[in-house]
Every structure is written in structure tokens, then in C-alpha cells.
Image 1 (cartoon, rainbow, N blue to C red):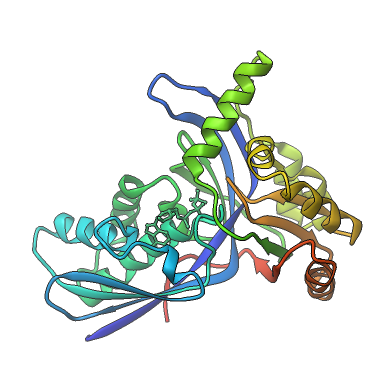
Image 2 (image 1 turned 120 degrees about the vertical axis):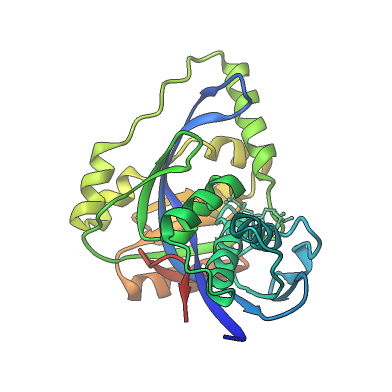
Length: 300
Ligand code: ATP
């Protein structure tokens, strides 16, 4: 095979509960990931050495040196296989960069699946999941997609059954937010308020809403402990969330560490209308309708 193309989705966190700061600097999380139909494509072609090019909307914001997560993934896979393989990776970027939608993790997962195929390694999913976990806590989820709960740093994953398709609108912001800065702001706000931070637990009502496919109940139970920090760093997101609610969103939330805002719609038609209203009123400069859950990194 001389070229392999993999499609890999973005995610939104329908629950993101952040526990107290641990001594190692991480937080224990309960992180319910949900894969949505905004996709990057990762193409791997036979080549000497491992290189990457990025094209599409956000390409100027993505590094093409060894810090690119797709390159790191390909190198980790070659190391695991114990040989020096080459691949030219081409990323078609649709997922916003530093948008809280795990775009870099998606590309890493895409590169793992594409190179596994290109190099004829035939490694099972369990091996790819292990390599993915070392690359970053969101990468294993990008491999499997669907809906899943992550615990620990978010990397210990269990798949969750969902009872239907949910329709979303994502309001994309100008410029990204650094995940590390949002966590630091969350810690700072918590220290300032002196409130005790509870141990994170899975919301049973949210589980039930996912299982029964009840969009109204899911909208009522969306939660994100990083939202106050993201709103402090980007106050203009508050009015964006309010505008979505005024236009009938069943739930409105910052996606992960932001600044993308996620709105749960009643159905596909409502999602299209909501996206139009958000842009027409200037509440968002770009709004994209999408659905979930969708499958993880897939060869196409
Ligand atoms: P998360 O939701 O997992 O916290 P994010 O969606 O906020 O992540 P990413 O788009 O994954 O953020 O990008 C974070 C940073 O990673 C970017 O600012 C960029 O410099 C770097 N990066 C490295 N490789 C990639 C890649 N392939 N695509 C996007 N960003 C990348």
C-alpha cells in the first residue's frame, strides 16, 4: 500500500469534572468524551523519514516540526515496532486548533492508524491504545470515538452506550486557548475562593440521558468545571453562551478548555437554525452544525 487516508473526529466533553490538584501537577478527572462529526483527515504516504504538512483552515497555527503530534505518534509507533520506518503525513485540518476539541490528539490517533496500515504492522487496537495513552490523555479516545468516560488523568477509558444521535452547534472563536493556562486559572480561582474541591464522580442523570438518547435531559446535565476559568480568560464567551440559550439551545457549554462553545440542539433542523442565528446576530463569527456520537479514527 503506498497511501492510507484516515478520518478522525473532534470531541466535546459532556461532563468534565476536575478534582483537586495532585502533587504531580495533574488533576483526577471524570471526563465524558463524545465524538462529533467535525473531522480531520490524516494521509500517510510511503517516504524516507517522517515529515508532516498541514493544509486547510487552521494550518498556519499548527507546527510542522517534531512537536507536531502526528509526527510524535508516527515515531512512537515505529519505535514500538522496533524499526525505522518512513512516512509523509498530510493533515487536512478542519478541527479548530487549541479550541478544546482535541484536534492535535485526533491527528495523533489518525497517524497511528494510518501508519499501522501503511507499514503493514497489523498491531491490535490494544497496542495502539497503549501508545496513544503515552502521547496524551485525549489520544486514546480519538482512536475509539463514540462516547466514553475517562478517569485518572482522563486516559483510563470505558465506552458508554448512547441511545441515539445528538445534534450540536459549535461556535468557533478567533484564536485558541492554552489548555495548561486554563487549568492554571482553574487552580487559581479555586485557591482564591478557598472552597473545598470535591472528588470527581460520574453524573448518573447524564449517563441515563446518554443511554436513552434524551437530548433535553442531556442538555440539562452538561457540565464543565473548566468553564469558569475559560470565561475568566475569555469574557466574550459569556454572551455567546447566552445567545445560544436564547435561541433555544437545550444546553450551552464551553467545550473542554475552550474557547469553542458547544450548544445542544433539539434536532438537525434546529441545529442548522441555531448555527445561522449565532452567526447572523454576531454572537459567533463561525458556527458549525455537527452530530454525535461518531466513530473514532477510521481508514477511508
Ligand atoms: P484539548 O481539547 O485536547 O485540550 P485543544 O483542542 O485545545 O486540545 P489542540 O488543537 O489539540 O488543542 O492543540 C494544542 C496545541 O498543540 C496547539 O496550539 C499546537 O501548537 C499543538 N499541536 C501539535 N500538533 C498539532 C496538530 N497536529 N494539530 C493541532 N495542534 C497541534
